Length: 316
Image: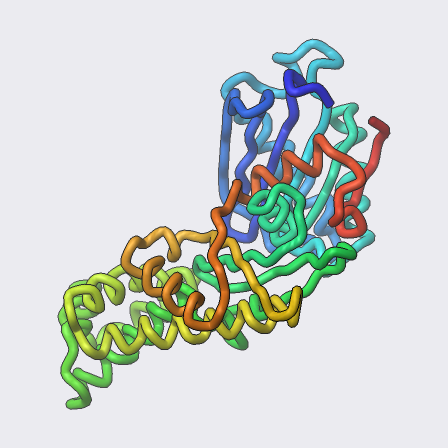
C-alpha cells in the first residue's frame, strides 16, 4: 500500500474497543467504547464485528459514508481471543472485508504488540499493564510466550499483582503485622481497611480495581516504605523471570526486550525494572510502537515474519 492510503486500525480488547482512521503516520480520527468477552465464544466473530463496526461509525469523519469508494484501502484488527479460535478469527476477517470492501487482517493483541514494538522484526516484548505477559517471535517466525495467564493463575509482577500485594500488606498491618504506609493509602479508598474485601467484591472487574492501587504502592515504595519497596522489588524479579522464560537461549545467551504497558511508564518502576533486567543480562531496547501500530503494519504489509499468526481475507 502507498503511504497516502487510508486504513482502519482497531484494538478490540476485553475492556476497551478502540479504532483509528490512519493515513500514513497521521491519525485522522479515533473512537472507543467498552470491549467484549473475546473471540473464543461461539458467536465471538459476530460480536467482534458488530462492536468494531459500531465503534467505526463513531469516528469523527464516519465510515464508510464519508469516504469515496476506493479511498479506504485496508483494515488491521488486533483482537482479544484470536489464539482461542482460528475459525472465528478468519470469520471476522471475512465479515470485515465484506462490510468495508477492503482486505482485512485479524491478529491477536499480543502479536500486534510485538509487531508494533519491533516493526516486524524477531525479538521479545514484555507487556506490563493490569496483566503481564512476554512474547517472542524467533527468526523462523515461531511464537514463544510466558505468563499472561490471568489474575487467578498468573500475571505475576503485573499492575494487578502489585496492587493486590499492596492491599494484602495493608490488611496485614491492620491486623498487627509489619507497619506500612500502605495502610493509610488503602484506608483512603474506603474509609476503613475492614471495608476493603466488600469494596473489592462489589467491583465488576476486581483485577482492574486492584491494579488501580499499584500507583499507590509505587509511590510509597519510592518514598522509602520498606514493605512497599519489597513488593516492587519482587515484581521486578518475577518479570525478569517471565522475560527469561520467553526469550530462550538465543544468540549464545544475548537477550533483548522491548517494554510496553502502563506500569512500565512509571519512571521509578521502569528504572528498577531496567536495572533488574540488566543484572540478568537482558538489554532493554526502545519500543518503536504499540499494538495499534502493529495492527496497522499487518494491514499494510504482507509476507511478515509473523504471517502464520495473521488471519487475512480479501486481496491486495
